[in-house]
Image (cartoon, rainbow over all chains, first blue to last red; front, side, top):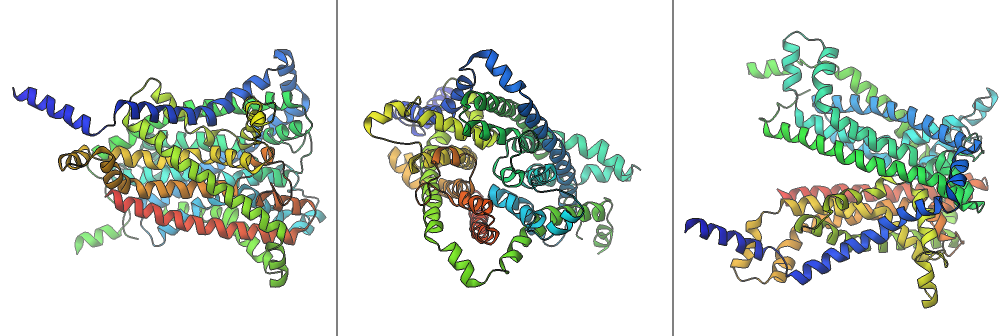
Length: 300
Length: 277
């Protein structure tokens, strides 16, 4: 009898918390239609257009020397930007999460700054410094060092736009974890590095990987900022995204889409990896939240 | 007192090293370059500055950039809300895949999105060919710009509304129902006010992202001065004509707008958090 009552109470609760069946169906269809139009179709057309001239053409478009050079440059830029921003992310998160100091919120806001800057503006700030008409331009020119319209400029622009990705994943995670475990390790005689490698790093590994995945996707996909600093020299300063633009503007649509399909594939891989790692990272954060709250860092 | 003394002695090492390195890296890569652009504008006179940023071509580009971004953010607020609602409240097959796919605009390079949308909406494209007989042109018009900007900002509203909706306790809606509210009343009087801060935050984020967007827009917009030219493209045009002063002036305008939006978004997030507690 009691159980019956509980059950009917639950079903009443479910009923008052949902909409009539017709409304539900309309809303689901609206959501799916919106996503189909804005996400599904654009991805499908990339792959269909890439293969419009057959596999033979597809493979030769990707194997073409300028395309390979563009792929290499994209890998190089991401290969430098991701590790450097990873190092920064870990050190910044350590300083912010393990210690208390004045102006912490301001520091966090400043770290997020590159997110709100337009990619084009991100490129221009480096042209104004290192370009021929920039502050260091004449000096660099005298010493025959090229940064703008050369590979270093592309690396710098990529570093700038991907700057916050790893730090912003790690800061909240490490803040939630507190300093208990590190303190215990230190009091048992471990030194600082041992504590970091054996205690902190295992605790943050999923959050860290999540940040790396996002950072890498943006580094390989950046367009506006690198477009400003690259100079578009085929085979030399064209990244993959810039090469897609050049081919497209030359009406070589099939080749442009062939290279674009590589980037779209990378995006899909990123989404899958992000879902798996994001889930693991959530578990790690939940484990922290269920244990008693970690001790706050010391007053500075 | 004694506890205080003990506390003052830091056990965790590395503050100097990590803080020092973080500040150095932040300054070299972000703060000094950003400060540089403001310094550069001081070499312009006010008259020069205003002449550049208030030129008819610049004004037309602001209208398109801000107007199209606002419409795109509104579309995202409306449909993003529905997507978030459906993902949290209803069950249907493939829901988890749909949930993951919402983030695609964050992962897909903007240039790829740009050529994909252009291919879909040109007069012989998959969608464009059905719109052309109706007299609707999308590619190379402001409508096309709105569409790609909607794509770019799509995840923001979904991802801000979703967690707040998830946290709403069932008893709130039950109480409303028990007190005699109809479902629509519960929605407009109880749920919507709770979700409002998150919705506005998502709108502002989508808008801020769209205003600065470049890669996806330039393919579909056709880039006609005064008609379909966005501000970031105008900056690049000036740069390519070696008009560094003009490019800098417009870049500073864009930067100031993004800082203002950042401040607004931070305030909105604070409001959201307060609402949730």
